[in-house]
Length: 202
Image (tube, rainbow, N blue to C red; front, side, top):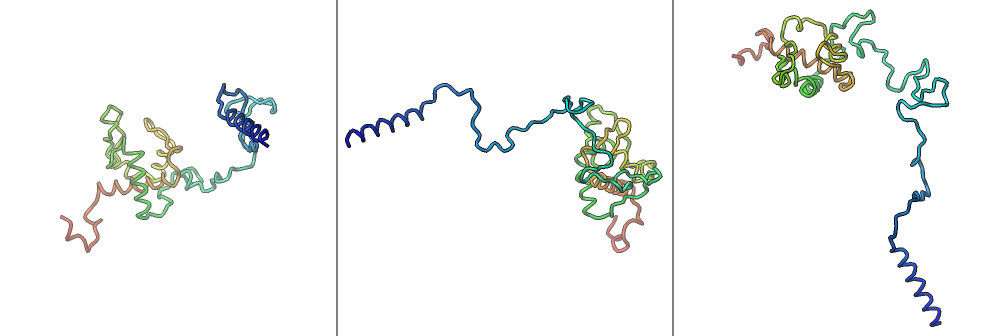
């Protein structure tokens, strides 16, 4: 019995000491009992493929198919143009306080660095030497179609780059609504004030 206990203690100490021995790190990859998707064979962007005849791993969508969420049948909403290609005159989104607040938030983030917070075209980058954009308050821009402003945000114009990738369609229309509110604020008439509030305006 004593011999058995001694043998058990020796084996236990051997196992414990072996487990504590760090030694040299193994160069073998760790064993994954359930690898799931740890190792995913895939192509990198612009990689070549021996599977396809044209050797291109990046494939065009199958003809006649549309990715989920990419069916853009509403030409007016997604392009700011009528089916005949002319620019839409009015914003297709209903004018609400929520829309204007969203437009103000997005305008202050994306547009004000050049156009400033009032739309006069004297933003911070202009003060640093950037070519100033036109003021929104000139007669020409007060008279353009809403679709024109949407199109310029989407595709850029002259020094202004495209913002179609940074600003979703809904937010572009919100910015259009807010630009119109800015124009109205800087060119307001006494007749714009409701009758019951005119005596408070001086």
